[in-house]
Image (cartoon, rainbow, N blue to C red; front, side):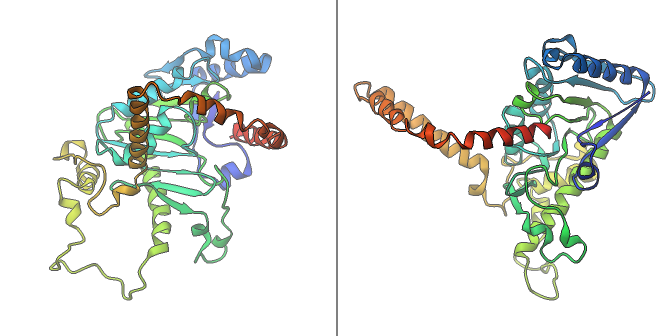
Length: 360
């Protein structure tokens, strides 16, 4: 008995257009569990989240011919059934986190952590995601780089200029995270789960945690392949027109390789980690940003600015209790009363968007 699972939808687009992963388990015990879940959902879908099958993870340690892994089946009553281990692994990452996730705009701490890792300076991170506007590539030493879909077909020769573009999940449908890929305890999280809290309590998904160095390296290579591919296409938008294109002279004032040997630069950590493994790391920079990046463009810094403003407003409210601020807030809420009439029609559109996303 065999089980096929992963991020791919079994469709033409899922298998021939989108970036996806599919795993094959040739094991009767694993297949029996998936069959049990199928029968439970088929008999009573609405009751599944309350069943014992949705309440825990199912471990498969040391199964002959199967990598050490565990799997959980959503929807759960609590998202923590599946996502707690993912968040714990991200918080405990020692050297690296690599990922490819369809969307990072969902609810929960896992997706927020992935958005901010590149600027944390704590670990080497490499990843990408997709939204309605395009791709966002997260490389070490720089804020997230948005790659518009137009970059996919610009300057591309036939037939590649017909590449599918537009819409969330149209190109990147993967959902995987690799933690410490070349460390002593690597782990991969993947499956059909979008890794969002809302999805884990609403959608029918499975999330696997694979603790195997061979599997971890395979997913890490795929993350690097995709990030480098799309980051190169983004760089083409601002590429120089100088010909011939050559590296700057080594005897110049600014050496092109200098940041790769600067202990305070994330590129030095990248060089040591990828060439010699975790044991080769000699220094971890205090900031995840490179000296050649633009820190004020970082999503993390934008959030910090917002949080400071919020803190200031709360402090001022406490220091001046006699200020009648609650009343203006009540009046402000009263003004939008006619809005429900205007929004009556768009409600159906919103429902359609939600239903489409659930199918992903």
